Every structure is written in structure tokens, then in C-alpha cells.
Image (cartoon, rainbow, N blue to C red; front, top):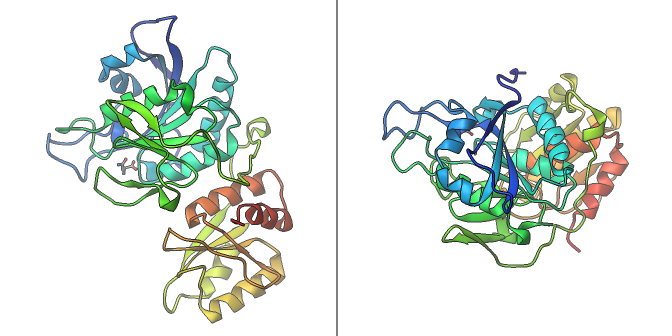
Length: 348
Ligand SMILES: NC(=O)C[C@H](N)C(=O)O
């Protein structure tokens, strides 16, 4: 696993105003902290190149909204975010939000895997206080970089009382989304985060959060109390991608290399080849590990099959089903208990 290059480098905005809230920004890297070779380079730049203090200094208006503390947790492209960084974020955010002085927590993150970290925090941080994950699609050094306004809006969201009790939120390009449902939808566009069919939670009007509905979280959303466990890693869970003629042997290869659960990014509503399902059932009979069927379409619903061994992901996409499995296995749930967690998420 890549090591964490910088841990616990603290930064802050230049003033303290006792009438404002207190937000800690946990910086992990990504394009929001990216640096490009020219003012017009929007691909092939270095993500995770600019430190948290520079991100804060780029938005002097933050001092009007909140007192700011910054913590550099990592500075990487989000393709390199790993379990070590996730667990560190969970520990530090849980500790921060438990303080009376804390109003909310914010994570700056690359957009490629942002939804995985946001979903992980949604399942593992138990607090009514807002947790906001924000990124950018243009590196910080290019013309019309979107990071500074995204960061400003994210801080505004983190100090808004109406933002409480909504679980972890994701914000980008004037939209506010639930971490539970959001997915990155376009590799290049500023309008990349899609809220699935459950819809956006709200938007920013003149950079002030506006919510469509009062606070709620998804029915059956589990909580995994990881912080006290002091884990150094999360269980190995693989995702296999469904397509015509998919190789059934990858299922066994995955388990042989240590997978403790498998997520199938199925064709359509959890579809898989007949040959592959046979191997999956045989591997389940040998090992008893969770075999979870989701969908490569990202949108829609996978319902349970009439069998004794497969688990349906409901409306969790493959990458979210994987994070849920890692958390559930980490706290020691067995396959039956895990099936119950997925069952509780099915719409009725
Ligand atoms: N827009 C971005 O942040 C993409 C970048 N490759 C990352 O995920 O770190």
C-alpha cells in the first residue's frame, strides 16, 4: 500500500472570530490540490501537489464563514486512497466532531474515488454534525479552477444548522448530494456527480445552501463503530465486472488471493453468466464468504434471488457494496448477519 506522505500537518485561516463556527478541513489530495504545467492544462496534471495551507490561503473569504483548521492527512491522487487513509480519516473526524467546539468536518478529496471515501465516512462516523466531502475537476493552478468556490461552499455547508442529521454529504459544482447515493458520472465534466434516482439534497444559491427536504437518512443505513478498534487495515473485498463471456475462473482466483467477500458488478439487475454463477455457488459452498450481486449500470435495483447463497445489493452500486462489506467484515459480522444488513436496505 502507498504510505501516507504527510500526516498531521496543521494549517489555519489567519483570524479567529468567536461568533463563527469551527470547521476542520482534512486534506487528502486530488485535483482540488492539483498543479498543472500551464493555465489551460486540464488533463495529465499532477493531482495532490498543493498543500492544505495553500488551499485555505486561496479563499480569503473563508474567514467570514468559519474559523478554519487544516490537517494534511495525505496528498495523493484519489486512485491511491487506501484503507490506511480511510481509517485515519475515520479516527480523526470522529475525535474532532466529539469536541463541543467543533461545528463540522470537511474532507478535500480527488473526485475519482470520492464517493467511496464519502460512503465509508457515512457508515462509520456517528454524529449529527455535518461531514462534507468536496473535490474539484480543474487543478488549482488553471484558469477558472473550480476548487476555491467548491471549498467555500463546502465550508458554508459545514456550518449550516440545516445540514445537521443528513449523514455525510458531497458537494461539487453548486450541488449538495448524499454520500449514500452519489456517483461520479463523467471523467472530465464539472457537472460530474450524479445523485442517482433519489435526487440531489439541494444546491447553493449565491453560495448559500438550499435544501429540497428536511433532514433524513436512508432507511436501514447501518453504522459500524470502527474508531475504537484501532484497525490498521480493512478486509480484502474484490469487485468482478460482468460482461459477455466473463471468465468464471476469476471468482476462484479472487478468493485464492485472499478475498473475504466478492461483489459482482452484474449486467443489468445483478445478471451473471450461468457458468459464472455455478462457480460462485461452488466457491460459496466451500468458503461461506458473502457473494453480493450489484449492477454495472450504477442506477437501479438488484432484488434477492430465490436461493440460499447469493446476496442482492439493493440500490448500492458495486463500489459502495464493497465498502459496506469491508466495514461489516471488519467489525466481525458473519455472512448471515451481512445478508441481513443488505436485506434491511431493500425498499419495501
Ligand atoms: N478530479 C479529480 O480529482 C481527479 C483526480 N484524478 C483524483 O481523483 O485525484
